[in-house]
Image (cartoon, rainbow, N blue to C red; front, side, top):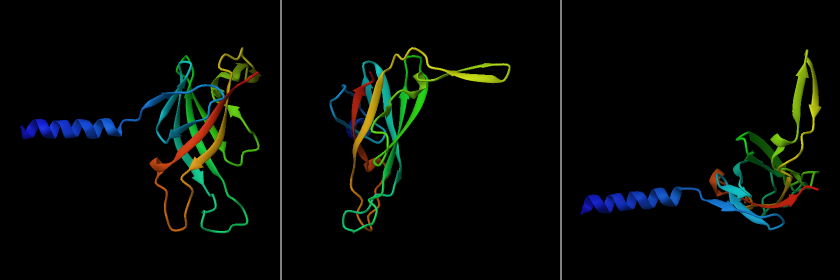
Length: 155
């Protein structure tokens, strides 16, 4: 009996640690935790990490608000990975969610040209916010971060 109880506890712990995949839709804000994968129309992307966070703590007055940058990894229909970095203070309001489908290199005799392929995955993503807010003397653990995004259709 005790063996079955321990097995049940272990299964509950493993299932609670698994990161769920969520379906998202254009123009509908959504939140991802670090390590969580989302899917839009069959294409996946994962919030890999918050790669930097220099935001001003909420209990401090700062000259500069600071910024945080998130790193997403997206996968196109051929399984090619693309790295997406977007910052809270980015000058670009939107960045391509599937950058690996934007540019194709063509090289002949050491002369390379960039060719824009027919763009199949026309999604742009914007970063709305990151939580939790930093506080003086409190370190945010990597898996405590959540980011709020919106996906837009590229026209």
